[in-house]
Image (cartoon, rainbow, N blue to C red; front, side, top):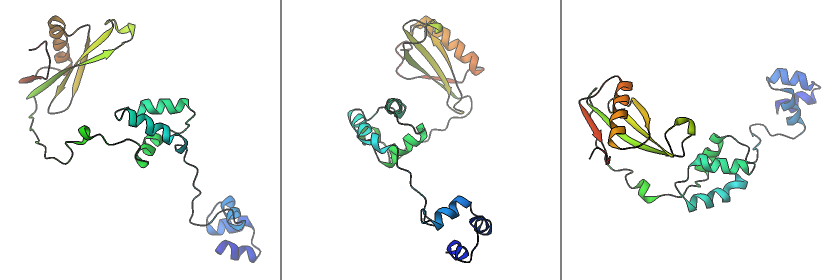
Length: 193
């Protein structure tokens, strides 16, 4: 209203913009009726054309990684950033609920106290098709050792999960961690059993 009143009094657009503390293009758009004060222009959502595609993919595989799906729609000319893509997945509730994944939500959980130096958790992670430069063969086996108290972890690659390789990488992981803890924990590790 102020811009229109000042314009009727003969003020220039530049003078109105300085007086109201606004940009000249904004004042011009208000005066020409192209914009309405207190209303932002809503750009069309770039995700909408890909909504059905994403819904179908996630209905087929609810555990599909968002990064994989993002790579696919980028090839289909989706231009927004990955963070915008994941925000749109949540806003449109594209991912169907998975009952086994949500079975533990809301249930009480025990908090286990881990004093410093008390426990190290060891787990193998299998990495298929590693780069040849790693020199570990067709499958890379990564032994991860994590300190329960701090969450600090170190990992070492191995050619296999057999006992000699386990001993070798256990030693390397412990050296990288700077020592050992009182207890070692191995979950579902056949070599240790």
